Image (cartoon, rainbow, N blue to C red):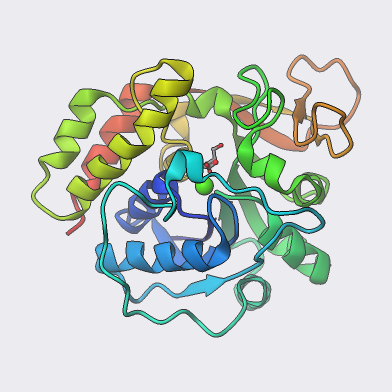
Length: 311
Ligand code: BDR
Ligand code: CA
């Protein structure tokens, strides 16, 4: 199985991504590393522990990482995710303890311990933990198999400012460091994740699953949906973060291009923008596989098939 570390700020769509990974035997989840993002760190690490307990996977260690961006004040998204970060269904307080080790140290130690090129990082929140690990231990960058992240937007532009997507906007300096690191990068921007929209039928199917995870997913997506409905007038909730895991399982469901992507850190209106050279108008070398399309039916069929394996 492919070894992954999921770096996360749950988040309803983070939760679905984590469940999809836990339901997939092709992936071995070495740990969840929490970061401040959608809500502050004490809530993201708590939510991460609630999710592994929901899935009956208390063997998965959860680590707390950075509680604020590298050099900016934390911006959160309770307007999207609710005050707990995981509004929609109340889950029991977790009994699984948080690991004592800091998430950044766990990432560094794991990459040094495992064979080079055998661990993939899946960041689905701001990139603070990853950038801090790369900065503190530059030797690990060459040992990463791939970074498969949710973040950015180009044709679809922003969801937090007109130019920027939330994960990149919250910590643009961290994003800039990761995009400049030379690590093999796969990027799931809003351009693709806004096509991964839930349908009423799919949510009803989740609610009808016999276990407890399906109904939880239905309640989360119902809660999550109301934001996009109010804001963009669209039916359905975009399952941003699960696109990363789905790509690891079924890259054939996605289409993109290897291009140069730079992160704006000094814009007057555009801080946090992912400046994506889709048409190759610069001679800056490609540093990312930038995904733009997903086979929506295939994506939701995969989710249904996998999530129905969970308790
Ligand atoms: C991203 O921001 C968060 O609100 C979601 O969990 C996702 O990772 C989408 O812009
Ligand atoms: Ca997220």
